[in-house]
Length: 361
Ligand code: KG4
Ligand code: ZN
Image (cartoon, rainbow, N blue to C red):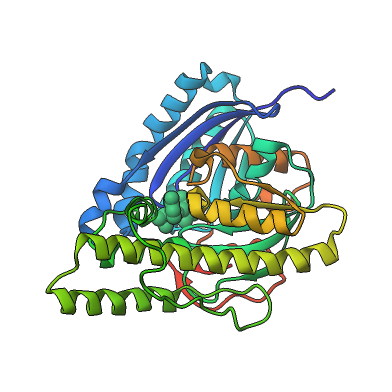
């Protein structure tokens, strides 16, 4: 029997400084996330330089808190796993330097983890899901369907050709004067709205396959907002809620229909492992989770979604991915460099468009 391993995970690729201690028996001993929303709120989006400085300032206290919450000292840690990309490069470098410094000082191994792999492997941490499975990774910078074969083995079946849904939620919130991050505030507003009040497009449903597009939807929301404002001399509270509900339903319909098609393609490849999993910040959305559950039920495939705290960015998923990478002969571990772009499936051509985390990989 292999001895239990204890890993410190570090994440700093966007606007959350995070550290966590996770064991190879899947126990999350601590999971600390220090957000930066207040620092960026005046700018309407994440400012890379501000994010990088905040990470550099907060990383050491975040790591110290993760160790304290876990009841561990650095001496108890077997290895350090750190997000090495893709992401905002200043933040990624801050995390990688912190991890390299700690590892050198302790004489322990350091493992570079792809942030997207962290999201994509989360169902193995939470549900011990066997490989392979179909993953919808849907966040602020990414949206893709993946056949997940192993800790560093992914085949992309489809993805967004422009914006990621989380990015669209954030932009819609901005258009309607709601706080960032947009996902939770649009979802809260949508609760009192009518999802059928405003007709919005379901982009790319007329195209075969499971590629997606969300940028036209965001523009349609802008147009509808202006129409509603002109008619009433400003947008009413109810109209804003209706617009949020209609937008959320459009995103949910597109993801559900594309998931139906992705399931069909996936099952042709992996008929004996019928499971759909979802991960990433947008997977925290209740309507989207339940639409995906319905789609999976109709196709007779199992469905799993992580608890909300493991949907959005966190370091427990990075620690877990590090643990998984330790179990295979992983060629990407050395040298550990920070990468702004790092597609999970390097054999598929890059998708069009670019978001806050660069081109959709
Ligand atoms: O995975 P994540 O924390 O960071 C990236 O890797 O991008 O995802 C953040 C994104 C943001 O765009 C945020 O608005 C969105 O996830 N999000 C949500 C919800 N919670 C977070 N979108 C829709 N509904 C939510 N409840
Ligand atoms: Zn993420």
